[in-house]
Length: 174
Figure 1 (tube, rainbow, N blue to C red):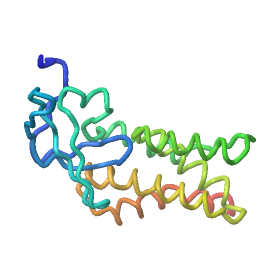
Figure 2 (figure 1 turned 60 degrees about the horizontal axis):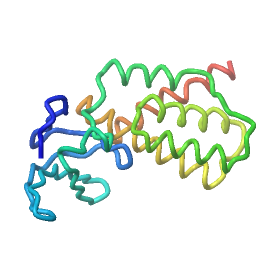
Figure 3 (figure 1 turned 30 degrees about the vertical axis):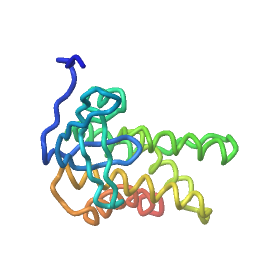
């Protein structure tokens, strides 16, 4: 197996983002023999989900495994939260599918778009169960990354995100 010099190297203890699961912590790098070949695997634990994932080191880039977002990237996500909601007139099933794809992309700005659109579009009306589920999923995913970057609790991060989303309501009423 040839090592790729361009691939990002993660160390034990690093926080990483796996697109489909969010923020996890690298527990270590293990080497296993699979099909007669030596394969190095990152072992990543996702404490919130009580899950452990093993990702081949050589496939880390292809799988979307990445370092935590920079403060600038999260700043862009926060600005997105303050923007105007962009809800399309498509059927809910189609929009829900797009929202899920954005959440699973692992991109904080795309996740912020989901939060913004679901929060804004439903200030006046009651959210459906599936809207609440998708909103909560996006909130948790973005809050975990924000918490890891800013070294705060997930609850504080979620409150911070909700605080950014909520002032618009009081501004419109004034």
